[in-house]
Every structure is written in structure tokens, then in C-alpha cells.
Image (tube, rainbow, N blue to C red; front, top):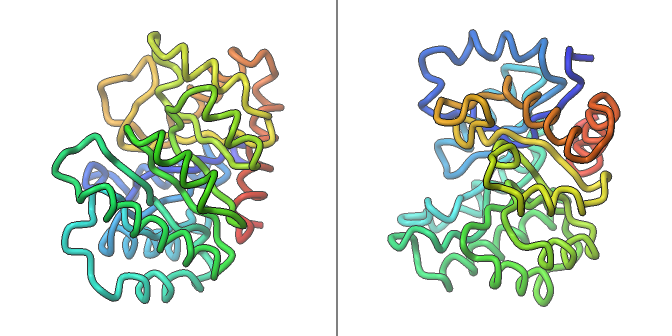
Length: 259
């Protein structure tokens, strides 16, 4: 076991922000964390995520097309994902979802169609889905209430309402919480986190983004996951070690290829 016993369920170590010190950082992380799941966002980053997973025992990959990366998506993108999906260290389809924040993204109907296609592919390969939901909570909840069943999923960096969380909990979906849960003005995030059953809770960094306090504004990295987890333990009123053990169990229950 690592020093913390934690898993970072969502980190983009493929990011260009890590180009200068990636290997040095990963070497240190092997002692700090039990494991890392690295989701891709398009063809290039998914391929890089798989390469990192092949190189490092404690890193696993997810593959998918992020809603910000749909312009020019290849016609055979599902075939590409299917080829990766059988890899022993590809543990999920993701990061996929809906993003209505950036107006230059593809239209909502295009985003929904490609999102649902990737969910269907995940079901075919019995893989969970890592979900990105930005300013699309209404449509996202409706999709999971009316159009999706029989798939495991984690709502990465959950930012929806408590009411939305309650509906998703009923369906047994997982929730990822990261650096935003440490921000002073994020009381709503902490309220939702406090509601989520412990067996549906995951921790993540979303590195290199969303750095926790006290390093907010600097590049995030999986080594800061401990700050988020210790803050959560304080918010939830449980021992850190107990929370680390439970969330590690949750990672393996969701990402069933991880043993």
C-alpha cells in the first residue's frame, strides 16, 4: 500500500502541463498513491493515456471524446474506442458528456448523440462511464432518468444540485469530488458531498486543473489529492484512514478491471 492509501480517480497526466517533469512526478506519485485513472479526451490524449498505463503499473486509462473535442471527430471514432476498450488497462469510457459552457462547442443535439453513442459502447464492453457535465445539469439528469440504464458511471467533479444528486444516488451512480470541495465559496459542493453515501464517493484531482487550497491557482497534480481527502474527512467527520480505505474499495467496485 502507498503512503496515503488513496486513488486519484481522475487525472490528466497526459496534459502538456506535465511535459517537463512527468516522469519525475510519476516516480514520486508511486509512493504517495495506490493508483491513478487517466481519462483521455480525444484520439491523441486517449492514446497517450493508454501508453502511460502500459508504462506504469499503478496508472490505468480511460478513453473517449470529451464534449469540447467533438469538432472534426472521425467517422470511425467508435471503432477506435472499441479497439482500446479490450485493453486490460483501459478501465472506462471517458471523459465524455455534455458541456454547454463554451458556446463554440458543437450544438447540444450533436453532443447528446455522441454522448449516448459512447455510453452504448461502454455497455457493450461492460465498462463504466466517466462523465463531464458543465452547465448541462437539466439535460444530463433527463438523459439518465429516461434514456440510460444498465451502465455504471461516475459524475466527475460533481457540481449539480443536491436534488440532482439525490436522483442519481437512487440509481447507484458514483460521484467524484476534487479540489473545488476545498474552496471557501463551495459550500454547496460540500453539502452534496456530505449527502452522498460513502460507498458512492470517489476522490480526484482533475490534474492539472482545479487545484485544492492552499495551492489554488497553481498547477494541480495527483500529489495534492491528500489535501482534498483530508478536507473531506474533516467535513464528513470520519477518520482519514477510514475514508481512504472506503474510496479505494469504491474505485475497484466501479472500475472492475482494477484488482
